[in-house]
Image (tube, rainbow, N blue to C red; front, side, top):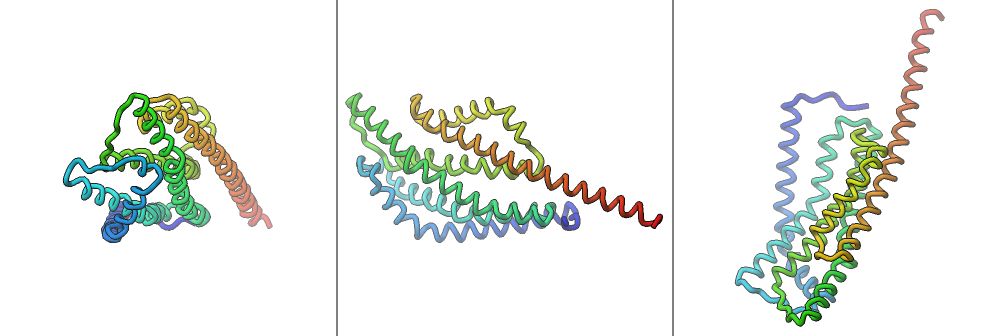
Amino acid sequence: MKNKDMTVSEHIEELRRRLIFVAVFFCLAFIVSFFLAEPVIVFLQHSAEARNFSLNAFRITDPLKIYFQISFVLSCVLTSPVILYHIWAFVAPGLYEKERKITLSYIPVSIFLFILGIAFSYFVLFPFFIRFMTNLGERLEIHQVIGINEYFTFLFQITLPFGILFQLPVVILFLTRLSIITPAFLGKIRKYAYFALLVIAAVITPPDVLSQLMVTLPLCLLYEFSIWISKLAYRKMLAVEEARKKEEEKMAETLSDGPEG
């Protein structure tokens, strides 16, 4: 059963409490990230890709900027499970008990997909782009002097979007559960979705066809996987709705037969 309806003022008050809690947790995570940032920066600087370059600071403030960027990213990652939980807790009163349990399971799946997206982009795409840019520079006889700020900015541009894009199956599943979209709709807009993914790939990759295809292909496969997930969820929803309808009809027949008995 769903919980009782809340007034608008109660919704606003609950939202305010949850936002304050998330903000406080983010501040604590940011403090913790300050201690984690240095070993993370050192680790990234000693990766196979970074060792090919002599990373330089062209501004006095570049090291501090990188330190704050890494701390901010780490604090966002640490806070993301809390954000997801409070989003779920805010909408949970409007869901049935079974729906609350199912949607709660989305949180670990979402975190796993985020890590998977980051890992895929860092271990597969990022080395490919670095090799491509290095080989291009050598062919053009360009001596590359890399700024540490530019290196980490490029790293973030490649990895973080994939962590977000890999949330697509969870988002599709959630919207399907809410009856906002259907598998038929997703199939109908497939060509537009592919075009949008191609545009996203063009934005976050170097301007060559091979790089864009390397990014677009897994995103398209992810979209097809999302459609498959949506179909499973939609069929289950229809089955549950059909069973509920039959149960209501059976109860109505029982009630109508009661006075005659």
